[in-house]
Structures are given as structure tokens and as C-alpha cells.
Length: 232
Image (cartoon, rainbow, N blue to C red; front, top):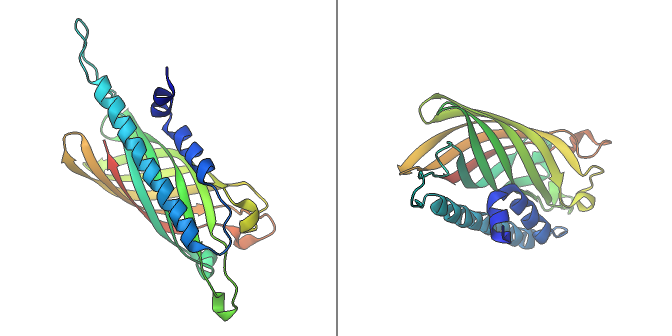
């Protein structure tokens, strides 16, 4: 098995590597962090190309054998962009967040219940001159890794619940004393068919966390976010 095959079979590992490559400590420099965010999102989207290539190879029939496809087991993949607005105390110092994610939906009950595995990158942009103090908040860079359940009560419409860990990529700069915190994310969404087995997955979620700084109750990272993803 070559390196290309390893990354295609391990998309979450691929995302972790990307975040380590592009992890940088920026203090009050929104433009530079935005560039890194878009770079990571673009490279995450490139993963879709690799996965589609693997899928195409798996659908090639071999003489004398039964044809199989990567979708024959019902697993769905999606690559998406995430954007959100901080809530609660976080909104006092932060404006919005932007990132990207990959997700696998593994069927438990055909077309009705799936186990989800999700990993991505989120940058939460700090405000400048907070409340007229000339102080600015350092951007928070997170690597969320979650798993959960996705249920379709009716065709195309789903409710989803996930939990996992959010890893702080700039722990010291953000003023955290923990490298990770527990995160949870209830979500509702709809899948829009676009031909064949492809679809657009649009979901709205609330994502919350426990404290990233054990001494500061306001160090929870909570926000409402929209995820729009290409699924196949």
C-alpha cells in the first residue's frame, strides 16, 4: 500500500496532518489566520478528489469477479465548509468562526440511522478594540473530532447528535491551560440530491464545550454554526 492509499483510507488522519502543517501562532493578526483557514479548507476539499478517485477505482469491474462499489455498504462521505457566530460570553470578545470538515456516515439501519465520524478545523476570530479598551482578542484555533448518531425521521431531513474533543492548536496564545475540552453538537439538517449518489448536506448546529481554562468559567467555546457540504 502506497502513501496515497493510506491517506485515502484515513481521511481523519489526513485532516490532523493538515492542521499540524498549517498551525501557526498569530496574535491579533486576522488576515494571516484567514489565509491559513482558507488554505486548510482548500486542502480538505482536495481530499474529496482523492476519495472520489478511490471510489472510481473500486467501481471498476474485474473479469470473473462480482462488481462492488464503495457505496455498496451504504457509507456516505461529505466535505464541507463551516461558518458560525459565537454565543454567550464568547460573543463579547469574538465575532465569528470559519473552518472546514470531513464526515463519514456509517449505516446502522438502512437509510434511517447512521453512525457519524467528523473531524475538521475551526478558527474563531477575535474582536479588535473590545468595548473601547484598545485590547484585542487572540483568535482561537481548534481541531474538533466528534462521533455520534444521525437519524432520518423522514426522507432527506435528519437530526444529529455528536460529542467528542476539541483540541486547541494555539493553547498558549489563547490563554488556555488545557490542550483539549469536551465538545457536544446537536444538529438538524437536510440533504438535497444533485444527481446519482451525490447530494448537498446543509445543517445547522449548536456546538458547546467545557472549559479550556480550568480557572476561568468563561473559557467555554460555544457557537451556532452552518455546515454546507458536498456528499457522495
